[in-house]
Image (cartoon, rainbow, N blue to C red):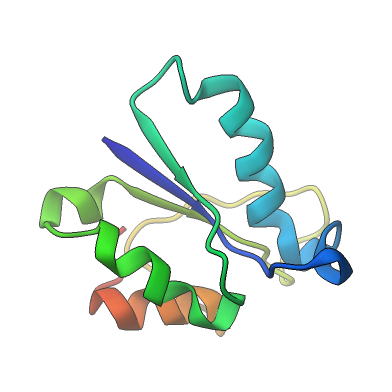
Length: 108
């Protein structure tokens, strides 16, 4: 089963900010696809820099790791552009770095 994680920060002050792109996208996609596909969606309740703590318990095997998709903001991309990558570093993104550190792998 795929696990799609939307990184962002909880709370009204962050709700519609670019930094919450992951949370926003997961919210939109989850409404349309959750019942139609075998996908689990997660928007961690903790702050982005601690996202790994929420993700790690759900990723228990190499197969789980390969089925992990993380959506997050990338300030190096122009607004509205997306990039898909596999097995890459965090590029300095603290939320993604937290996930990589907690999983001890970037192979997702």
